[in-house]
Length: 378
View (cartoon, rainbow, N blue to C red):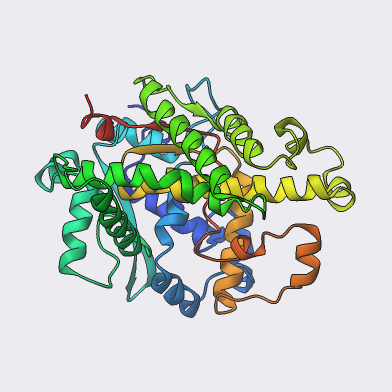
């Protein structure tokens, strides 16, 4: 019989691993610690977990964990190792191209809090049309709730935002028609991506309408280029460094004070350069905001709201750092003491770096559009 260690784990086992990390159950891996593990300052209490459940960010944490390369062996030429999602796709091949979808939820039973899987198969989703329309239907029936399959705190806000965009688009082109709600909302979403990313990068304070319009148009063209020119193989990823290089050129076209991409990503003497060089400091802030905005306004909705994007992260340490910040926020009622003046002197990014809703938006290593979206355009 094949060694069970090499068999792909199912969704329940995946939730078990995620639960162990989220709740810091280190006694499973270090039994010698025994009761000492209960004294961990970063261990979530019942009160902390209740607050986590109310925030609706659990699946933002899970998304990062599920798509981070924790596994050593992988087949991609774009990154080393493999993700839990890729391992689960060995068991459920339809997950690979977005036909299946997975979320998780917190369950409080007699034994305490547990993570439970919410796995939606291709057959199930086809009965509901797709991930997005299933969530949209549930939202209409359950307002002000975290609805399946997205189970996210801002899905309702996202729909409201696109509905407003639809009204504006309708005034511009009254004859605008779409085949179905999925395509309608997806195309409306694509039109909003560039402006949201540009505005949230906080570039030139003297940003004119002309500069904004040109930058938004160029970014729109580039995003559609990515969508139209991606290969359809399972390893046809876009590498984020290449993508950000091109995005940075677009931003520099609108703000000449930004330094080159090569210079801003150079980690040598980074702290000293931020403190000594205003252009470097500003560029570092814009780059950080680009990383968050690109995920928040582009990759994340396609991934979690439309079910049509696979994102891969390879920085496991960043995940652990952000988990520590999240737990710290939960233990302090979502607010921690900070020296805003000192923070802004170094990097003015505290508004997103310490907001529990945005912590889990971050630059990835690679990403790819999935067949579950392409099928509507083939």
